[in-house]
Length: 367
Figure 1 (cartoon, helix red, strand yellow):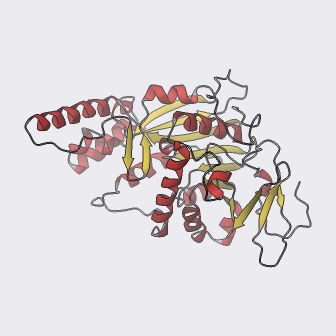
Figure 2 (cartoon, helix red, strand yellow):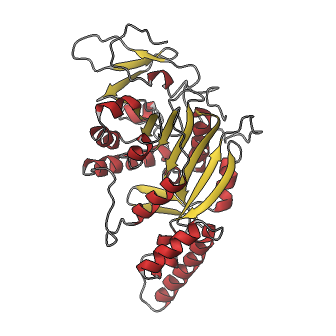
């Protein structure tokens, strides 16, 4: 446990942090400074790893993301992809001012639609801790601060967390702990949160293994009965029809001697270095079923989906709002919004596929 006489540089929510390699028992304590120039750091009482606190942000990343050098046998494909995305997120955060509403003519107007849907339907109690997994520059943090007593906000982009930190008041910083970490190896104690939010994050994990591990880890950090609102990119039936039409158009133009670049029409797409996986409804149900109870799922963001996006703006908005509250929305969604709960009793587990995670053998609990 952290001693009461330590200087007040540890966050009020420090007691809920853990070593990412020992999330069950790896309590983090203040590391002794060897000189006045040493940065503030923590060390794990189990493995002795040191983790820095930078500008009040707890930097609890696994080794392969901290050292700047590949693992002894080289980084695997997932780590390489994550590092590429981290660099891109850091670059974007450097010019970001956080989330602001944009006019209808703006290409990112869809973010208004998404924000409104999530904040309409997410259930956040006013007591206990809420975790925002993959907070980015903190799009939902002001809204959460109005509802939750305390918040832990996680992201793997340090620049994004710094942008968020700069927009928080001293009182808000005391209520909101920022942690740089990996979603599939969370440095957070068991049964910490009464509620959680995870918006547009799961889709960017570059393998099924990491997505399954992230769901297991999120579940572990939630209290029994705790609720998770999870939004992720959707691949519904209307998108599948659009994919067939785009492939047919591409094939026809190729036959006519007017070849275009082959369109990305599958469930995996790339926006520069940012990878996205578009889940079907059934895939998401199978992904969460071993760990969480699915209470409801709704399709959101039909505004941006085929063929709704071809309608005039006013009709797009009307169709979006109607489909959001209708079961048909799941067939036209750009995103799925799942309402999930950690059960009070354990669900029979489907093991996550085995994969080596140094130093974490026997520690990665599937909830």
